[in-house]
Picture 1 (tube, rainbow, N blue to C red):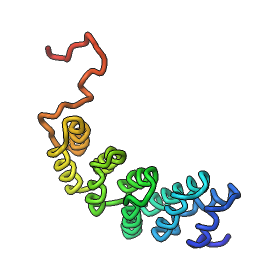
Picture 2: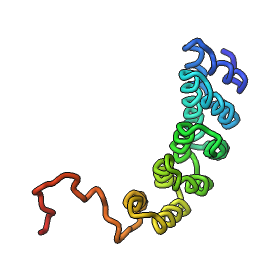
Picture 3: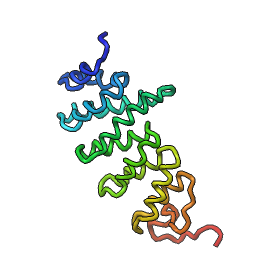
Picture 4: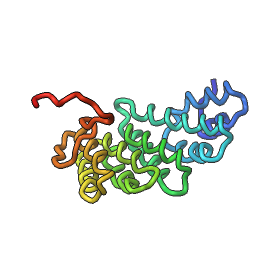
Length: 189
């Protein structure tokens, strides 16, 4: 079987033959970080099934680079993912990239992800990514966002901080607030 090079991956991912495209998608992990940008261009502009295969190929690269002992590969892939968070990419691709980022990136991702907290359509995805990114910088970014957030955004940011083990007094936990009228009384009253 022919080794999957970047050129062959890009050719096969755009194939009209489903098995060829699927094999390229499933084997993309070994091609690594250098394939992320070109695959993103295909994912952003290709025919639906080709675009979907390209996006899943990127996800497979993330999974492959995230394996134990591949820290250098993971960092290289994370760098390429962060390049895709800019305004030049389609919204759904940016959303997918945010979710991939927390799976593989470290503190280098905090600033680019935090910059999207105020984005009307990506803010929640950015918050969720920060909730899962490792390190104190992600916690600090969430705390800074909570300090300047409006009342509507505070409960979600407080939830992310609580998930990270940070107390957030003064911000109600919406999980404890009934969404329907109920006769159930809290325990201890």
